[in-house]
Amino acid sequence: MGRSCTLTVGYVGPDDLPPDRGLVVGDRCVIGARTTITAHESVTLEDDVWCGQGVFISDASHGYQDPDTPIGRQLGRHQPVRIGAGSWIGHHAIVLPGTTIGRNVVVGAGSVVRGDVPDHSVVAGVPARVVRHLEPGIGWVGRHADDVRPVTTAAQVAAYLTGHQEPDRAPGPA
Image (cartoon, helix red, strand yellow):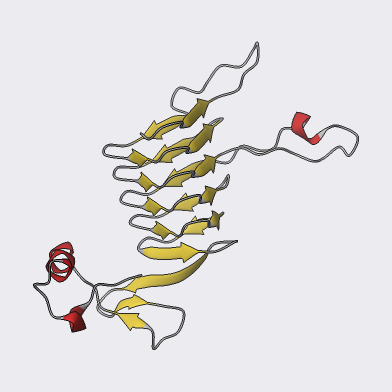
């Protein structure tokens, strides 16, 4: 866990008790500096989730039903957040309530994510959209059918980075 992180579970109030497992962090997770995780009811980071610096993850928001009440005093719905094993959340990304991120997903830096993100995909933007996904037997497919990059193993990437592999087998998927 990096410096100056904030992890909160439950509410602060005289009658509020935190949930038994409001925040679950799996094995070998990395939480970057200045990351904030707010779990009013349920935020789960499965094994091997890595968060860059300044990431914000929350299962709660404010409401805005009554136009005469200050917004900060209006509670919104709580919607569970789950981040699948092996995923990478880029610097300063925001993961909003109700988000389910699949396994081995890359969330681009500065992205704002809400909803369901499929396994083995790369999402980026505001709002985040799938910009690349894994097609078994084909490779990493971008937004256009002719944008396909090969699947590359960790060993192949290491060989490429150390100069022991031909440049035409450069690593994907980014």
